[in-house]
Length: 370
Image 1 (cartoon, rainbow, N blue to C red):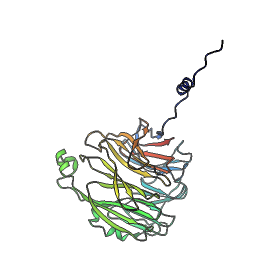
Image 2: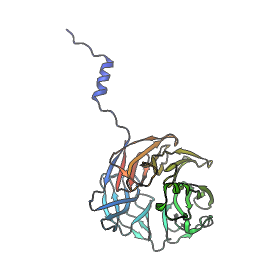
Image 3: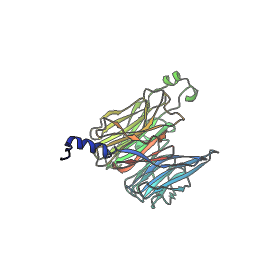
């Protein structure tokens, strides 16, 4: 007697349950700072290519003493080497896998060895927060007190940018917090926030804080010719434009962050760099976004932040890390993230949309796993 034949449908169903299903793209922790007597805060991270990564920040011991630290990898983050630094890093910019610059409170450092060794520039502007170099000679630096500078000799000399100093508002309360270029197009974003009346925020009641939410001056410097000319504009906004990411596809993302007690902790805007039009892209009352990222040759956008609870967005307790992805920069889907990942702030870096990493201010580095 012949054995009964298994129908195609039943066989397919059996295979469905036997074979493992392909996992969706998700984020796994690659590195965690594990010392019990100190904590690590990562301020910036760069992956100039898919293998070489540099992260920088500082550790704080039980006596609140700060120790600068740099993390290095040459195998896509599979292992990280901890290298003590001389000054705590605020931010970095890497032109390729070897050449980079680092900003500290005391000056600007440069490396030709992928962050293994650093040399401090003999002359550098003060109060700098961000750098961007178009090539090894031509770069820009931006920071506090209306400071925006340009160098055309690799940082040997720096010239103040007139468009930045001509912006309205007192230099004392004006900060340029981010720089981003895509090809010849570039944006430098800043804000002017005079001190509030009635004392510091922590002395105010919730109602008083809400009543004190008043718009302030936001400033944009725009160039379409690699910084040969700049156009300065300003607008009255409630929040601060803290991050900008541009892509060659005539698209950009801009992040606006708000103080506690505001309706939303943050808003993300889609920027059409061809027309200058901005469109609301994302906001949620329980998602405080801290970084946005676009990639060359891709329509994919990523935003990262943390989950909030209640009207106090900047709580001392870190929230669960949240990452969202979009293919049109308007409709966003949350991605799976390792449940152990928490942060007060996080940033995204990577050479393309297939090789992406996230660093947190709680001493974690996560990698996109496809």
